Picture 1 (cartoon, rainbow, N blue to C red):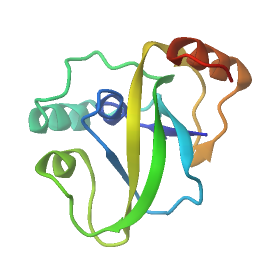
Picture 2 (picture 1 turned 135 degrees about the vertical axis):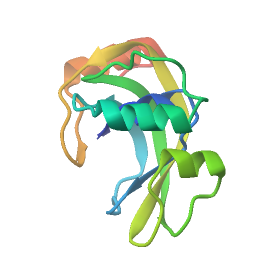
Picture 3 (picture 1 turned 90 degrees about the horizontal axis):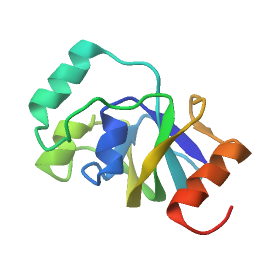
Length: 138
């Protein structure tokens, strides 16, 4: 399964800075999750995030590609961020769910793929390209 996330949040997950992705809905799924960097961006929002999170690596940030794989291990209602860094990287509050991500591994060469809303299945050719980079087999 995969989740499309705007940049620079996708990169923040890939480099291990962001361990909780917040959403307004709770998934029934747990397990391996590809992190896809969406095509959309907002230069103003990007500049704001970069000013708040100097820990992020410098851009440019790839778009329209799978940048990492991780494991979705839990989903919890969130009222506030557990750390200052997570607070700067997420939207926490009432009616928000924290998708707890573990074992994030950045792909050395991001894999081109179309994204989608919600959770979606990674196309077979992209799955093969991802597995070649992280070891193992699809």
